[in-house]
Length: 289
Ligand SMILES: O=C[C@H](O)[C@H](O)[C@H](O)COP(=O)(O)O
Image (cartoon, rainbow, N blue to C red; front, side, top):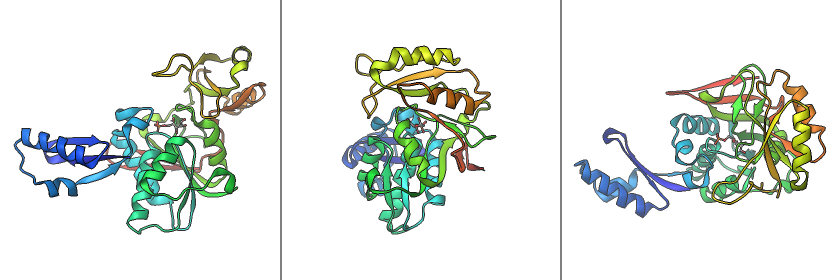
């Protein structure tokens, strides 16, 4: 987690890894703007936030107010004391994880346990103080809050895996009595057309790519950032992003991909979604299935 200072009145917004760094940066900006504020007042306004450095979309994603609104509201509305909760991955669910931690710290929630869908959500949950349970210790969850790369307002299906976490996410999303997607209004599309992330065994990448072409896709091996070569998932596999254009037959495409040997998991989460919480410019809307 990181720390954040905001002073909306003077349009000052500062974040850093530690509270001391934030105080220093805030001090500089307040001085430059000619605003008087003593150190204790600065410290009082500092909040814990997900660290933009740990999230694939970086500061843009983390500081998108719509995602923040969507993530926080989802946590407030769907998590109750005593629940086992699946903790999704990405810049939107990061806000939900941070909010669950805050509610626990402030005593508004008790006895909540989290199961992380990725190392990212594991680290966020640890830092914010959510007790964690390993995936192999539970077989059912009360609710999972997860993000999406695209969602539909017409069908309970989303495309996930923009951060390569979809294999573990699909297990944890499917274990939950209720799957709630936290997202923002920009990701609604019908039909879904986001390139489908397909996790594949490394040696099988060429043959899987050929098979994906045969079922109408345009496959592209996902390359890593700040590392030469392709991206490896947490499971040691590769990801092929496969563009099918608009998915007019989502279940048919999902079935076609599942039948390809060498495919470990794909990012079409078919008929799994119970509710979508979407952050808008000034509110949060919900779609329920
Ligand atoms: O692999 C990543 C996950 O499926 C994320 O939940 C998805 O990419 C959405 O992330 P974000 O909320 O950052 O757009």
